[in-house]
Length: 476
Image (cartoon, rainbow, N blue to C red; front, side):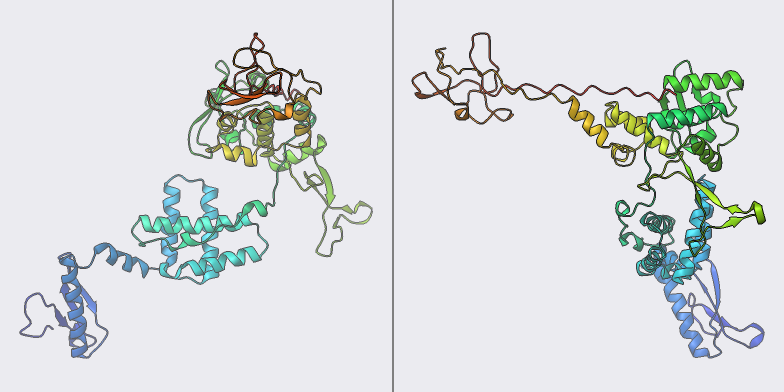
């Protein structure tokens, strides 16, 4: 029970049943009554604990202690697993892709297990960096390390936004350079390879699937969600909803793709809400199509000792194989490589990067140029072949003075070396020579071209003819 003579607002101490530890009772800053065990039977010690509770409540009530700081301290004492569970629930409520949320959960579970962090305060930059170093040492790529870092940083940023932490200490962790450690490099398909693939796909009713990826840049998820209501054959557009950027994009339909979609709709009549592709072309099916088209090959599966693994018994025993779609340089082709094919074909057709960016639906045209435009020696050689040559015997023009007197043809090396430069000023003094090789100064514009009167305007140059853009066609 409370001690007699205690002043108002100083709280009270009591015991349940008259024995055991003292229980502190006081009114907090919120005006509510709080009780907390002092975990001691010593009355003097319990008094000091009670005075601390009462003093803290007064400081919070008067605004000396920030309520947000108090909440951060409380959240910091909670189990880290509880914060992770709340974050994953938030991601699912926000409508994020289920597979993406599962990957986040897997990454955060590994982080907690590897770092040994049990509280939010334990999740320091040093602890996370040690975990990322272990991920890198396990042989995973720089992209995998960056994804683990991104997941951890995104989780802690959410904790800051929801008042569970004050600042995000994980932002200082540097990213890995993915350009130096690319494990999957895609290459574009040639027109001949696309023709063979479309020939194989046409026989199996999958031509429109591959054309949507190669001529409209649709990703696998886009293909799975595409409905006939999103395809407007009259206007020649495809509307892509809920794509990777979570926005609505409208892209034009290539005539070859429009013909394939028209044939598919005629073969399988459907309502606008019906999906264009009721069945997804799996990776296994795609690899078989690539194998039939000569884009992939079979290789034996090896065991840990490097020996081929056999399946079956007796006369039916044969080596186990798998289908790979890689070239001699280790570059792969898959469904996403058809987007690379589209980006490369747009570049070869002379399409401006900003237009190609809109077709590829990238937020930055640098992404289109860096990852989806693959030009080789054939393209550069073709550009050089279209470049106009230099005339070996150009017509030598004669300079004149200010009075129009035609001067003798001087040494070309004595002309002012300002041809082709754009910083020549109008009225700049120009030195020429008369027939008697007398040097004098004129005020003619060096950038003007020669007129019909035979007067030479120095600095006039011929423009190189523009490259003729190649046609973008994947006729199969």
